[in-house]
Length: 432
Figure 1 (cartoon, helix red, strand yellow):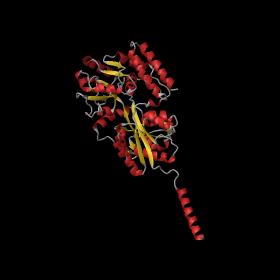
Figure 2 (cartoon, helix red, strand yellow):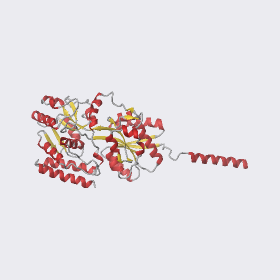
Figure 3 (cartoon, rainbow, N blue to C red):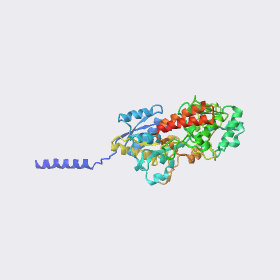
Figure 4 (cartoon, rainbow, N blue to C red):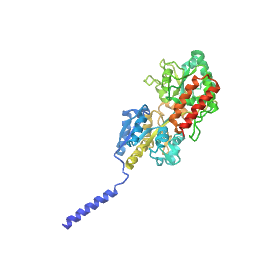
């Protein structure tokens, strides 16, 4: 009997030690990822290949839900309110850092960035992912620089090709105006300052800010500054420019359609995805509907050195109170954005890597793609990612409403200045 009791006690002791020895932070068996349609990160087949590779290496399964920009924010906010948010979310700093992070929903993942990571990640992307020096709510994967496009065939027919540098894709404000004037003389309508809503507003913001060196926010991202004299000068110059109309009936997507179909000879809502597939219907890269050549260009500035608006996308972790799931989510981020698998994850986005190397080894993603290599010439001109400024959603609304009022005004400097002051004040009120 004593022998049986001794064996039983021994077994209990072994089981107890085993339970104690089990790591408290063991990874979860499954995590959830919600992703917005960032390139092919919105494509189930593409994402499944990436998550299957992660599962094969780590044993952690990934359940994915695909969001749209139409109702994605509402779905996330509803889930967070019900305390049923996903483990991981893929989007940009304006949502992960300035919105959900600022509201306390996100995990601080600053521990994922060592000194070498910080040296290898694009400075603009790195800064946008940190709320302060010790707090990061996003790990960047990919990025792009937004730009504009011109119908190069039309430019040549108008005799304006001397104003366009097809190698650097840079031009001055004067060269831009000369090109618009030549196109307007031949075709009439050249392009539109679209303002029916916020869609594509990164283009109108960058055009206005670049023309004479204006800014949209201060460097600290605490206030909106688009009411400066340089922006007023730009808005008036565009109002007075023959061939460019303020159009409250279209947004950025509709502007692209007008450009593709030959109605416009310029588009201000452009990036590499449009260059690769301008009408999103697979008709071929860099061509309009009638076969004219499309040339992407930086926004014009007085000295020819543009400050481009960028898109930055990466991963953040919602704080659901489960350490095991948080650790598993961190492994997912490192797998996708800081490992030998990163090139595949970036390619899935159809954008550019947010870093140049991993652990000292060059990150080579697009060397086999001539168009991507050419477009990469714009990346050094990526400017401040000011979309993390407080009140960003209301500021975007104020911006397009301001453009509508400018377009409906008599075009006088006083009327334009009044509209700018009014709506910039509204943006700043929303930032408080």
